[in-house]
Image 1 (cartoon, helix red, strand yellow):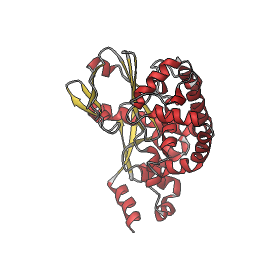
Image 2 (cartoon, one colour):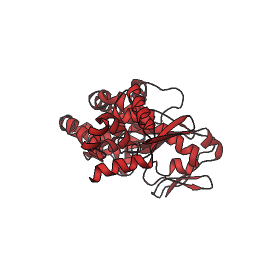
Image 3 (spheres, helix red, strand yellow):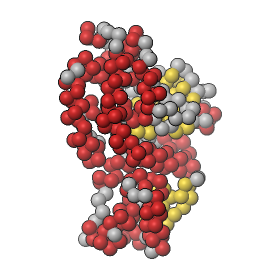
Length: 323
């Protein structure tokens, strides 16, 4: 299996990072595969997949390039540059790193992701430019219109992970971050189940980068900066899997009932705003009514206040679902 040796100082200095380029790249991977992980993603694919396939059909060189860059088990390194931990660069600034990749570096990276020689069609010097152009198209057409809500979901996931960290330590925060990843103890972080040699991260920057699709990957820049890109914890899927029972909506009002249904696991106000697309003031008012009715309780986790259903709230939701 692939694992990293991460000492206490590296873990203590790690941070969560929001990356628009990572979100666009994850969306590109979803479009390329054409399969949805949950109803919310299915609806998004129904809207944007036809245009993506039409674009790729009209540009067979770029289509071949992206298939090669995504590889079987490894992305071409130039496609997934490691985010920086300082500030938050714009999408254009992040994309510039791909555009500026030397052509020979891109071709070398593709031989690794392909696990073999390049097809003749890819022996050319414009591969970084083509990759960046496609990512820019994906961003403008299929990500940017949803970015404000997606960003709220990403920020909500960071709050939830931080709460897990404060309650259960790194094992709780990392074990379910992405498939195959878990904390092994003794400074060892399993990254995946592939048979890769271990890497020493002591003294390096370690970043965790959430994205809203089910995609994920790891990357590193030289030997001092590492990133784990991971899928948010089911935020988009929850909205599709947890409809509000009609009778409960009539009893409490659809919006307030929706908040109660989402509290099957503890969530912060920020998470509820992201999941419901309601304003902060509206969510706050609904929570106050539910608190006064003793259908929910709250507790502090680090800097966040988490809300969860009481026994009475559980009985009410379950009764409406089974009635």
